[in-house]
Image 1: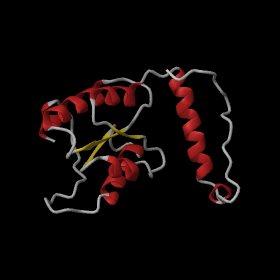
Image 2 (image 1 turned 180 degrees about the vertical axis):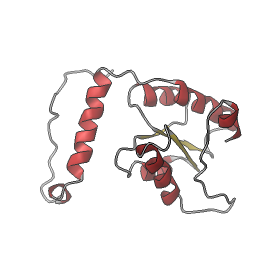
Image 3 (image 1 turned 30 degrees about the vertical axis):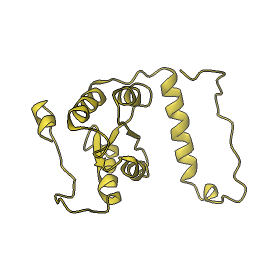
Image 4 (image 1 turned 60 degrees about the horizontal axis):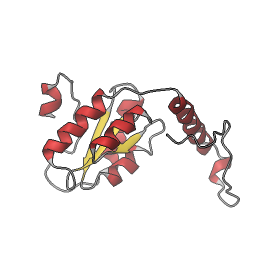
Amino acid sequence: MGVLQKWGHSVDDLGSHTPEMVDYPAYCAAVARAVVKGAAEVGIVLGGSGQGEQLAANRVHGARAALCNDLYTARLARQHNNANVLSMGARIVAPELAEEITRIFLDTPFEGGRHQRRLEQVAEIEKEECTEESRDTSAAKPRAPANPTRGDTK
């Protein structure tokens, strides 16, 4: 948190405030909710691997949490996916690298363009999953995208 404040960011620490092991899902959901509701521009969640924290944050409708344990993923998470929650693994990422990842995540703008179209498709899936019909998984079938693209994976 100190480095974020040094960089001029205001910080709202929603953490456990204890060195003891805690169940992280409620903390990660609180961070994601703060972002989705507009109380924070972005959120950061930390755990052992970062994987569970990312999963918990992504359960909040509108959260786009990305597990970024390297610089390249941090850049693309923002540039292509407009990620709004950064998740990192404290057992995986050294403190100096964590600072670099955080800096890149915060400084990288969203490109938009084809990535915006894809985010809209993801949002539509999320919206569909919130309906009662979607909870019936007995006949689950993959659906074709509304605007399919051929070979556009860059």
